[in-house]
Amino acid sequence: MTTRTLLVGCGRLGLRVGELLLADQDERGRHEVLGLRRDPSSLPTGFVPVAADLSAALPTPLPRVDAMVITLTPSAAPSYREPLAHLAAALPEVPRRTVFVSSTRVLEGYDASRPLTEADPARPRSDRARVLVEGEEAARELFGAVILRPAGIYGPGRDRLIRTVLEGRPVEHGRRTNRIHEVDLARAILALLSSPAPPALLHATDGAPALLGEVVTHLAQRLGVPAPPRTSQDPGAGTVLDATALHELLGELEFPDFRAGYDAML
Image (cartoon, rainbow, N blue to C red):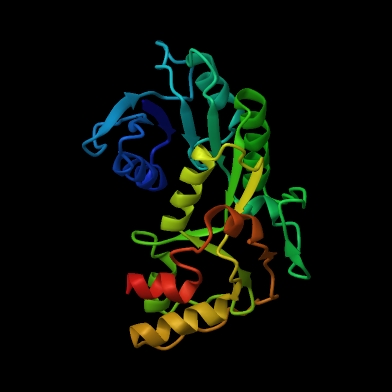
């Protein structure tokens, strides 16, 4: 049996998910991966290109798919509701499973006084977080989507913090941070696609929150440079996220904390 999966957005994360799906071919079945982009000409071999601009109604219907992963970003969509409505209108039927990738940014209104779980309601403060909450609501309404909220994503090609350390730019040493390696995030998406009873909401975080100062000091030691200075304003903001649900879904992570993940990048 062939399972057809549509990757909407299909940026760096979508490509990794697609590659994992294409590698998962055995006697039980195979995967067909469709990558939806405005310009899909650079998609890797094995991906079925789908050219579509969701900022307007699509002129032709999309193919029927069994599953869908939506990885649009707020910067690419000032509002999610309209592009998701265009997507829904172009699909001949609602996929059996949809995963909408949001962000733990929607929890920015909390402090670090206790670990936050999936039971804590969104508490956005910024426009970007409010757009994400709107996207979650639209994805549930239109597709019955499972909502996946990654913490800070890092991994190959996601080296902003490494560059910050190399350039010696000041950082908030006291900020509490949470992160997830892109490899484990892609694994979580595959697990949500295949699970017979996935959670309605999942936070993707490695369960090893750390002060930003601790992270940049480790990176500086590995890179052989001085640790970046502390910013003049360092209020010790940030949140602490609980990773129990992710660990129940995936078991052991390939990169259980920032040391394992960043050391593999250096």
